[in-house]
Image (cartoon, rainbow over all chains, first blue to last red; front, top):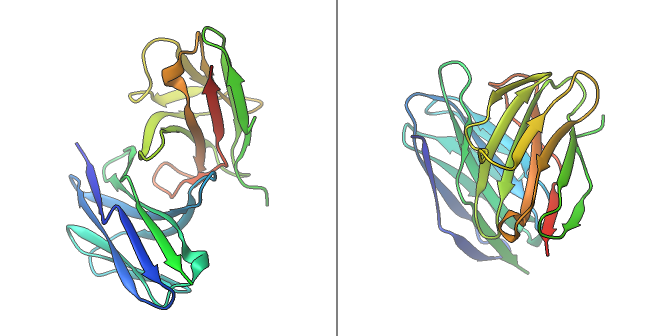
Length: 111
Length: 113
């Protein structure tokens, strides 16, 4: 069974203090790894898809990287508006496979 | 370009009543997924549908829960005889293909009193 573990569960940063969120996964052949952002009371917002080890994607202050066992979401010089829960999810290869989500990292950026 | 739409956004039901949650996918998307999220927990997959077909319902309880995605109209998640444990946020997502990223709606927050 596919598994996704995110760490830390919660992270508190000062504005401008860069850090990384971790997503460890176990899947029998990866089709894609997804990062989402979820604000309180809202639906998850799609950020990135990574397909193969070594791949990197960037969006504003966020950069996602992928290895064969884990993915990192690097946040550079965060701002208070980056505060949210960040979700990682994986989908196995081979026809239709359901997407498995981690429980997320709750990020708080303090001014 | 409208995103995934869900209604109602909030739904209050008494124990034993029925809850109907609706989801309209993004334009051009024919794959619909339903998830449940409890406070401080992750998204749990419930069911995956295409037009007029249930593809995967492995995450949906066998009793009281059903889902459909008719040829015309929104996808509907139906919960019969609701119990307090059904209280949760229910999210719908859609994708262009089953191997593509999913886009989520704003969710329906169900409260059972």
